[in-house]
Amino acid sequence: MSDAILYGLCGTVLVGLGLFGLIVHPQPLRKILAFNLIGGGVFLLFGAVARRGAAAGFGGDPVPQALVITGIVVAFSATALAVALLLRLFQETGQATLRSDG
Amino acid sequence: MAFDIGLAVLVLGVAIWTITARDTFAAVIGFVTFGLLLALVWVRLAAPDVALTEVAIGSGVTGGLLLGASIRLRRTETPAAREKPGATLRLAAAVLCTLVSAGLATTVLLLPEPAPTLAPQAAANIPATGLGNPVTAVLMAYRAIDTLLETVVLLLALIGMWSLAPDRVWGGFPGPRHHSDPEGVLTFVAQLLVPVGILVGIHIFWIGSVAPGGEFQGATILAAMWILAMMAGLVDAPPVSRRWLRLLLVAGPAVFFAIGLSGFAMAGAFLAYPAAYAKLLIVAIEVPVTLSIAATLALLVTGPPERARQR
Image 1 (cartoon, rainbow over the protein chains, first blue to last red):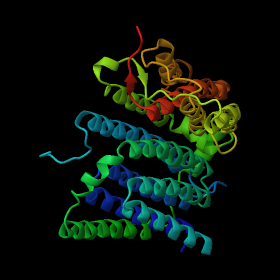
Image 2 (image 1 turned 180 degrees about the vertical axis):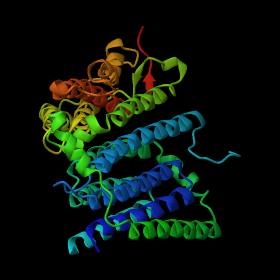
Image 3 (image 1 turned 180 degrees about the horizontal axis):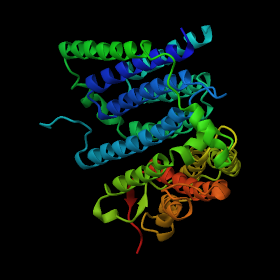
């Protein structure tokens, strides 16, 4: 098994773990954390594809690598916006819950 | 190979800790560790540019943001944890997630041979850009439209965050005011580290044209230095209604877009660079983009306006 496949499989487990956390955790901040784990897993899948595409003297295909850099920055901006929404909810209601009957 | 297996197990172990830890603060610490380990994975996958981005943004800035939020939300943890779903739902979720992972794993194991790659095309276009780092060449030339849209996404996230401010503080100072303690360790560290950090940030940005690095990594270090100076109370965050601040934030995307449009006249397509000036134009885009990204990242971590402007 090549290192690309090994880390690709690692990425698939991360997606599953993150998805589990996203479903079972009631706290919104834990959901945001879990969502970032899913993101890490997806990026790692990209990394495996990039590594397999090593050619032309590069250790990996630079195109998916550049897409992952873009992805990390976009994931951060989404996380920052989600945290801001959550803190505003807390400021407004004094609690941080997603319950609809609350 | 043994190292890779060990690293993969460690990454998964820390990820499990992040999901299962009882305390959210501990989970965030797990997430920061996870990001650092993931950066090692990127180095092993021959992607040092991604590794730098992961350390700086994925682990560093995101970690700082989540740590701050977890401290502010600490007392909501216990009541929220009581809403935990029952055993049946958790079991169903576990089965679903295992199926998703298994499906993805099958895809990974069945990836086509030989692996499709765009590396030769990217390599063929590098001489035209005058750059030495293939990833920077892809970000600034081959897929420049992605990078342009990304700078706009950052700006949109900041506008979204600012618009969460209550009316009475609109246009005011973002985040809490930190007071400087002249005898404090944080003040000392900030005074010592910020000048060096700014130089390192500029270096990482500049070296990005030929070696691992680039505008996002450099901008994150610059942003971290500004955040450190604000946290130590050495400087206060500027009110979000300041005109120079608004100009600084839009300068990067605006210059990028303007040079992209001038590509129609000079080279016949949007974001096309005439061969003789390619490197010059790329640097002309990268400098304002780096400054704008640095300011946007720092303000995204600082948060929406919380204190009204004195009139």
